[in-house]
Amino acid sequence: MTICRWMKLGIAASATAATIACSDGFAVPDGMTLHSAAREACGPSGGPAVEIYLASEPIETFEPDPPYVRIYIPGPVSDLAGETLVLAGAEPDATAWFYLTATESEAASSGSLVVLDVEGNNTVEGRVDATFPQAGRIRGEFRAPWIPRSSGCP
Image (cartoon, rainbow, N blue to C red; front, top):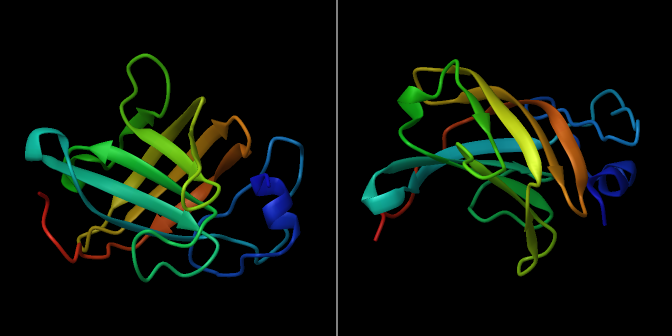
């Protein structure tokens, strides 16, 4: 199911998360948004990284029930404000996956993430525009509150 079909079914309602629009011209009705959250991730060689999730239901645990988008950004959250990151290609700055089911995901074939601000409590505000082979184009703004990681990195 594409994100456009998912949204047309009316499976998202929140006033605090990511507003999404699709490349087929589908306009998001007023009040239809996606929930978002950010957390610390395990980075390359044990260094810092950040994950941003966009989902149809409130994010209380990681991984949320599909469908959802996960964006992985190597580096500390403190370095993100004002950055524009490429999400696909030969040398991406970050990566994005659309999880269709718990076992089936697809990487973005193109896209970018603009981090507008990182608040003192690590809430990440930004804009995403990513295209996925099956899910299509997902674009919109988000405000992802920081949810502490329950366990450390291996």
